[in-house]
Length: 294
Ligand code: PPS
Image (cartoon, rainbow, N blue to C red; front, top):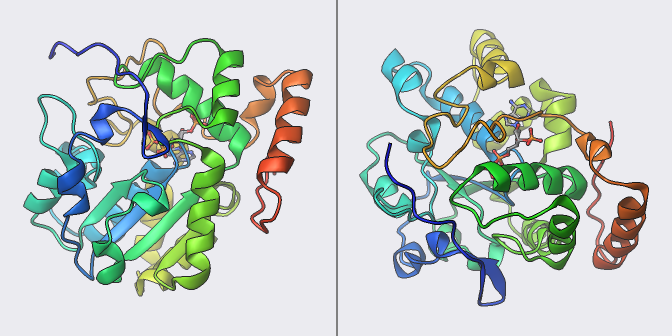
């Protein structure tokens, strides 16, 4: 076990709250060289990025030797573009060294921070969005257990900071709206919802495949759908975050609940009212709609 540095602090980075782990490598991130066959999975934190990463990894690479599935953690197979954590290779270096094609790339960057190379190369981008209330709850538990994130404090102050956009990667509202607006003029973006993935994984798998131009066999589709079930991922050491040294599973697991509507176990009636009022203001003038229950 390596000795972890103290939790990072949040600061304003060109108008977005960030920590140094995602800004220290900024020039290399912005100078990254994308390829037309790169596939990016973009999301605000806790929207289901890992879920979609695993789906794509299986679609493209499950025919390879079982070593990849059995002994290479998902976060190495799908490098995190903007990360630079002390003592580890940066996301950019990992991506540059990947020998498999296509490269599947994770990012949490707001759309206006995306390196321009992805637009120039017309790489495919899958954006995953999740309703604000479940995202806030999931992010709160994640920040409790992830020593590479700032101290979350208590739930009520955390929810306040969520509304103010004072969490790592900034405002959820601006993130989901920024990508939604970009999608209207970019045919290389597929905008998915966590709630749809929960409701009908097979249907969303179909949307993913047609976007990517893939025609998997029925057997492969079945295999993927089974392997990415919440309980199966939770028990899969290569996909459940258990190899990440910054995570303290005694506090909370990475694969925590995987549900739509867990916010109801956290929001008080008063918090819900205040949140809804604020939400209506922040999300007016957009046709972007989320489901908070199924
Ligand atoms: S991260 O750390 O920002 O990349 O997190 P991310 O992977 O985007 O989101 C984590 C949440 O997604 C849930 N998850 C799933 N739900 C249902 N089915 C599957 N297979 C699945 N895989 C991941 C995960 O449990 C986190 O949500 P919560 O609500 O905390 O359980």
